Length: 251
Ligand SMILES: Nc1ncnc2c1ncn2[C@@H]1O[C@H](COP(=O)(O)OP(=O)(O)OP(=O)(O)O)[C@@H](O)[C@H]1O
Ligand SMILES: [Mg+2]
Image (tube, rainbow, N blue to C red):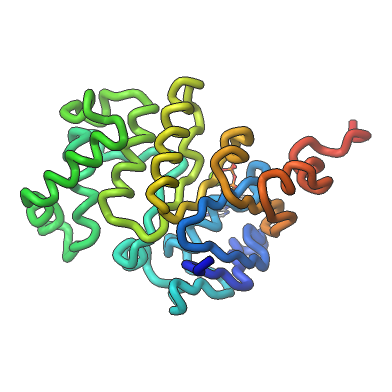
């Protein structure tokens, strides 16, 4: 398998809090890698430190052989590292369609003024149209983001990622807070992306979903990797069971 990104000795400290404390990871091209771990384990922080939202305290992020740690988020986005947010952040006053158009602009961002204007080419509109269908957003395309349910907003997040032609798709709990029906829709969408041989990193608390969709899973606890392997391997690991369920003899 060909390596897409390698993370070496990554640390992200907030004062005395070691949110990520020496983390290594390889993400291969075309794989779906799951990241699981209890609340506060450092999963979102890991995304933020990779994507340039935070500058890592230490360590390397190597994208296709090139060190990119500390690169600002918009530059990382230009290099094809696209992520969704645990808390959905649409442009609420815009339609679903225009939200995706605006996200397309990230590739050619040259300043807030040019952001929208530049994006509205026929080519981009056609692309957005195709992504709207792919992500199942057709019936709400012309509704304002403020007027659609969370299930649609989660799919919008993924649509906004897809429109940037990402090299790496990073999803932070795409199923959080969704009904079983909406979870199934997201699951189908992730399977579709897998079929397209995309490279995906998925943070998810929904373990059955993660086990089903991921080729490999990494388990984080207190900022450190405690296990990594196939879903089958991870599921049966003592430390993982303990981190999730707690020690049986407690309380
Ligand atoms: N900007 C920040 N400043 C200070 N502490 C932070 C910051 N961001 C995260 N933390 C802390 O870092 C730790 C890891 O948080 P993080 O959000 O990465 O966990 P998580 O694994 O994503 O949890 P969840 O499953 O609840 O989303 C937590 O203790 C959190 O309080
Ligand atoms: Mg999180």
